[in-house]
Image (cartoon, rainbow, N blue to C red; front, side, top):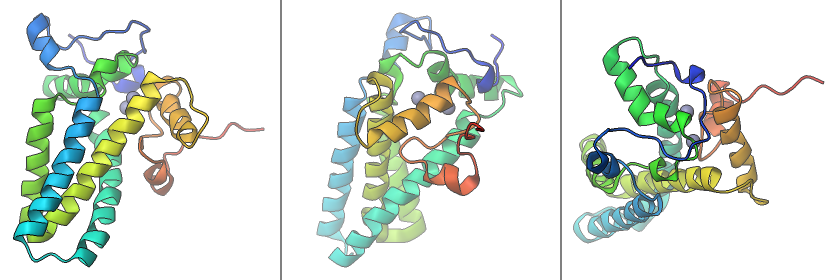
Length: 211
Ligand SMILES: [Zn+2]
Ligand SMILES: [Zn+2]
Protein backbone atom coordinates (compact mmCIF):
# COMPACT_ATOMS: atom_id res chain seq x y z
CA UNK A 1 0.00 0.00 0.00
CA UNK A 2 0.96 3.63 -0.38
CA UNK A 3 1.63 5.37 2.90
CA UNK A 4 0.47 8.93 3.49
CA UNK A 5 1.77 11.61 5.84
CA UNK A 6 -0.47 11.56 8.92
CA UNK A 7 -1.89 15.01 8.21
CA UNK A 8 -3.33 13.58 4.96
CA UNK A 9 -5.05 10.61 6.61
CA UNK A 10 -8.81 11.13 6.83
CA UNK A 11 -10.34 9.91 10.10
CA UNK A 12 -12.96 7.24 9.38
CA UNK A 13 -16.10 6.77 11.42
CA UNK A 14 -15.92 3.00 11.20
CA UNK A 15 -15.02 1.44 14.50
CA UNK A 16 -12.45 -1.21 13.65
CA UNK A 17 -9.05 -0.76 12.00
CA UNK A 18 -6.92 -3.68 10.85
CA UNK A 19 -3.19 -4.28 11.09
CA UNK A 20 -2.99 -7.81 9.65
CA UNK A 21 -5.33 -9.70 7.30
CA UNK A 22 -4.96 -12.84 9.40
CA UNK A 23 -7.67 -12.48 12.10
CA UNK A 24 -5.71 -14.31 14.82
CA UNK A 25 -2.57 -12.27 14.21
CA UNK A 26 -4.64 -9.09 14.07
CA UNK A 27 -6.37 -9.88 17.36
CA UNK A 28 -2.93 -10.13 19.02
CA UNK A 29 -2.27 -6.48 18.15
CA UNK A 30 -5.32 -5.28 20.11
CA UNK A 31 -6.12 -4.89 23.81
CA UNK A 32 -8.44 -3.09 26.20
CA UNK A 33 -6.41 -0.16 27.53
CA UNK A 34 -7.20 -1.13 31.15
CA UNK A 35 -4.89 -4.15 30.87
CA UNK A 36 -1.67 -2.27 29.93
CA UNK A 37 -2.53 0.51 32.41
CA UNK A 38 -2.85 -2.00 35.25
CA UNK A 39 0.31 -3.81 34.16
CA UNK A 40 2.37 -0.61 34.06
CA UNK A 41 1.24 0.39 37.56
CA UNK A 42 2.04 -3.09 38.88
CA UNK A 43 5.46 -3.10 37.19
CA UNK A 44 6.11 0.36 38.69
CA UNK A 45 5.33 -0.79 42.20
CA UNK A 46 7.20 -4.04 41.61
CA UNK A 47 10.37 -2.18 40.61
CA UNK A 48 9.97 0.20 43.56
CA UNK A 49 9.65 -2.74 45.91
CA UNK A 50 12.62 -4.58 44.43
CA UNK A 51 14.74 -1.43 44.67
CA UNK A 52 13.73 -0.84 48.29
CA UNK A 53 14.73 -4.41 49.17
CA UNK A 54 17.95 -4.71 47.20
CA UNK A 55 19.51 -1.25 46.82
CA UNK A 56 20.62 1.54 49.12
CA UNK A 57 18.46 4.18 47.46
CA UNK A 58 16.89 6.27 50.25
CA UNK A 59 13.29 7.26 50.73
CA UNK A 60 14.15 10.92 49.97
CA UNK A 61 15.66 9.86 46.67
CA UNK A 62 12.52 7.92 45.84
CA UNK A 63 10.36 10.91 46.72
CA UNK A 64 12.42 13.04 44.31
CA UNK A 65 13.06 10.62 41.44
CA UNK A 66 9.54 9.26 41.01
CA UNK A 67 8.17 12.74 40.06
CA UNK A 68 11.25 13.32 37.86
CA UNK A 69 10.44 10.02 36.14
CA UNK A 70 6.85 11.11 35.53
CA UNK A 71 7.94 14.47 34.11
CA UNK A 72 10.55 12.76 31.91
CA UNK A 73 7.83 10.49 30.56
CA UNK A 74 5.75 13.50 29.44
CA UNK A 75 8.73 14.79 27.44
CA UNK A 76 9.45 11.33 26.00
CA UNK A 77 5.78 10.96 25.05
CA UNK A 78 5.80 14.34 23.29
CA UNK A 79 9.01 13.65 21.34
CA UNK A 80 7.98 10.12 20.31
CA UNK A 81 4.57 11.30 19.14
CA UNK A 82 5.91 14.25 17.21
CA UNK A 83 9.05 12.79 15.64
CA UNK A 84 8.55 9.00 15.43
CA UNK A 85 4.78 8.46 15.17
CA UNK A 86 4.35 11.40 12.80
CA UNK A 87 7.48 10.86 10.69
CA UNK A 88 7.05 11.32 6.97
CA UNK A 89 6.73 8.04 5.01
CA UNK A 90 9.75 8.81 2.81
CA UNK A 91 10.37 5.08 2.28
CA UNK A 92 8.40 1.83 2.73
CA UNK A 93 9.95 0.97 6.11
CA UNK A 94 9.23 4.38 7.62
CA UNK A 95 5.75 4.27 6.13
CA UNK A 96 5.04 0.84 7.61
CA UNK A 97 6.22 1.87 11.07
CA UNK A 98 4.37 5.19 11.01
CA UNK A 99 1.12 3.65 9.77
CA UNK A 100 1.02 0.65 12.08
CA UNK A 101 2.22 2.47 15.18
CA UNK A 102 0.07 5.56 14.73
CA UNK A 103 -1.42 6.18 11.27
CA UNK A 104 -3.95 3.43 11.93
CA UNK A 105 -5.01 5.27 15.09
CA UNK A 106 -5.48 8.50 13.13
CA UNK A 107 -7.48 6.64 10.48
CA UNK A 108 -9.68 4.81 13.04
CA UNK A 109 -9.70 7.06 16.12
CA UNK A 110 -12.84 5.33 17.37
CA UNK A 111 -11.17 1.91 17.57
CA UNK A 112 -10.87 1.48 21.35
CA UNK A 113 -8.99 -1.79 21.01
CA UNK A 114 -5.95 0.04 19.65
CA UNK A 115 -5.34 2.71 22.23
CA UNK A 116 -2.42 0.87 23.82
CA UNK A 117 0.29 -1.63 22.97
CA UNK A 118 -0.73 -5.26 23.57
CA UNK A 119 0.28 -6.83 26.94
CA UNK A 120 3.29 -8.76 25.61
CA UNK A 121 4.79 -5.50 24.34
CA UNK A 122 4.16 -3.82 27.69
CA UNK A 123 6.25 -6.50 29.46
CA UNK A 124 9.10 -6.04 26.98
CA UNK A 125 8.91 -2.26 27.20
CA UNK A 126 8.84 -2.17 31.01
CA UNK A 127 12.01 -4.25 31.24
CA UNK A 128 13.62 -2.42 28.33
CA UNK A 129 13.13 0.93 30.11
CA UNK A 130 14.45 -0.54 33.37
CA UNK A 131 17.51 -1.93 31.55
CA UNK A 132 18.29 1.32 29.74
CA UNK A 133 17.84 3.49 32.85
CA UNK A 134 19.90 1.02 34.91
CA UNK A 135 22.77 1.50 32.47
CA UNK A 136 22.38 5.28 32.62
CA UNK A 137 21.84 5.80 36.35
CA UNK A 138 22.58 2.54 38.16
CA UNK A 139 20.34 1.72 41.14
CA UNK A 140 18.56 5.08 40.89
CA UNK A 141 16.73 3.43 37.99
CA UNK A 142 14.58 1.64 40.58
CA UNK A 143 13.16 5.04 41.58
CA UNK A 144 13.18 6.73 38.16
CA UNK A 145 11.70 3.88 36.06
CA UNK A 146 8.57 3.49 38.24
CA UNK A 147 7.88 7.22 37.80
CA UNK A 148 8.39 6.82 34.04
CA UNK A 149 5.98 3.85 33.95
CA UNK A 150 3.41 5.72 36.06
CA UNK A 151 3.65 8.54 33.52
CA UNK A 152 3.11 6.01 30.72
CA UNK A 153 0.05 4.61 32.54
CA UNK A 154 -1.29 8.15 33.05
CA UNK A 155 -0.85 8.86 29.34
CA UNK A 156 -2.78 5.69 28.37
CA UNK A 157 -5.49 6.60 30.86
CA UNK A 158 -5.94 10.12 29.45
CA UNK A 159 -5.81 8.78 25.88
CA UNK A 160 -8.51 6.24 26.70
CA UNK A 161 -10.77 8.86 28.33
CA UNK A 162 -10.36 11.12 25.31
CA UNK A 163 -11.30 8.45 22.78
CA UNK A 164 -13.87 6.48 24.77
CA UNK A 165 -15.98 9.27 26.23
CA UNK A 166 -17.64 12.54 25.30
CA UNK A 167 -15.92 15.69 26.69
CA UNK A 168 -15.92 15.31 30.49
CA UNK A 169 -16.86 18.23 32.71
CA UNK A 170 -13.72 18.08 34.84
CA UNK A 171 -9.95 18.59 34.56
CA UNK A 172 -9.83 16.17 31.65
CA UNK A 173 -11.81 18.54 29.48
CA UNK A 174 -8.75 20.63 28.52
CA UNK A 175 -6.84 17.48 27.60
CA UNK A 176 -9.88 16.13 25.75
CA UNK A 177 -10.13 19.24 23.60
CA UNK A 178 -6.34 19.36 23.09
CA UNK A 179 -6.22 15.81 21.70
CA UNK A 180 -9.43 16.23 19.67
CA UNK A 181 -7.77 19.19 17.89
CA UNK A 182 -4.79 16.93 17.11
CA UNK A 183 -7.09 14.31 15.55
CA UNK A 184 -9.80 16.32 13.85
CA UNK A 185 -8.42 19.77 13.13
CA UNK A 186 -4.65 19.92 12.84
CA UNK A 187 -2.45 16.81 13.31
CA UNK A 188 0.65 19.02 13.17
CA UNK A 189 -0.06 20.58 16.58
CA UNK A 190 -1.00 19.38 20.08
CA UNK A 191 1.32 16.36 20.37
CA UNK A 192 1.14 16.18 24.17
CA UNK A 193 -1.60 13.84 25.39
CA UNK A 194 -1.03 13.63 29.15
CA UNK A 195 -0.26 17.37 29.31
CA UNK A 196 0.05 20.37 26.97
CA UNK A 197 3.32 21.37 28.74
CA UNK A 198 5.77 20.46 25.98
CA UNK A 199 3.50 21.87 23.26
CA UNK A 200 3.84 25.12 25.16
CA UNK A 201 7.63 24.77 25.48
CA UNK A 202 8.22 23.80 21.84
CA UNK A 203 5.59 26.06 20.30
CA UNK A 204 3.14 23.48 19.00
CA UNK A 205 0.07 24.64 20.88
CA UNK A 206 -3.02 24.92 18.64
CA UNK A 207 -3.25 28.33 17.02
CA UNK A 208 -5.95 30.47 18.60
CA UNK A 209 -8.65 31.67 16.23
CA UNK A 210 -8.32 35.36 15.48
CA UNK A 211 -11.07 37.67 16.62
ZN1 LIG B 1 -5.50 9.66 19.91
ZN1 LIG C 1 -0.86 11.77 16.34
